[in-house]
Amino acid sequence: MNPHQKFSKALQTIPLVAILRGLQPAGALPVGQALLSTGWTLIEIPLNSPQPLDSIAAMAGAFPQALIGAGTVLTPEDVRNVQAAGGQLIVSPNFNPAVVREAVRLGLVCLPGVMTASEAFGALEAGATGLKIFPTEMITPAVVKALRAVLPASTVVLPVGGITLENMRPYLAAGANGFGIGSALYKPGMSPADVTENAMNFIAACAGTIRA
Image (cartoon, rainbow, N blue to C red; front, side, top):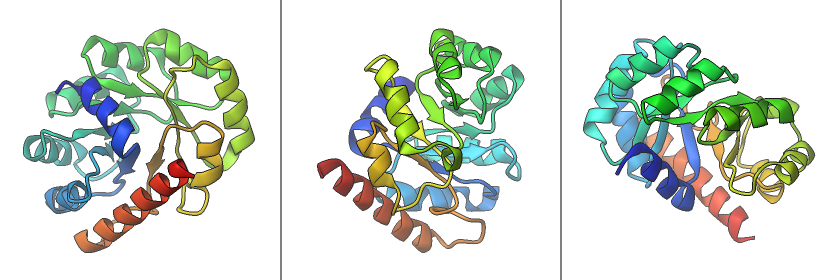
């Protein structure tokens, strides 16, 4: 499968991006295996983690069925470095047209961070695969609903920042397609067993909310 096929499949099964901030390369494969054991296939390693490209390369080599990539991608050079390491997912906290265009040129899945309608439409025009609504701590479900009302119906909307088991329901009801999950899923020092348990809890909460 190409990156976009992997992304589409994940959106239909487990539409959750694991944000593994602070992951050490030595923990990449154990934590990756913990996530994949639950069926989780969207994994982001922020570039401000220790030796992130090493972790991305290890995971991309070991788990070809998953969509592995980087967060905190700020420049076109970052995009090229991630792709060279085997990464296929580009996530940013902001919308930089040059970053989106480079990701599109390389055939990667690109999720820029946006907060306003202007940023959202600009990102889509540049070719973004979907939109990271960030930071969710500042964006209520009502705002997501308002954005969803004006965005193209096919737009993928993923709130990120402060997402917990308890606050997923109102965002999904407002039209979110999934979420990026950070410290509530993984913190440095967590055991693979802890990550597996957290992952299963988020999958259950997301699926339960969708069914409701």
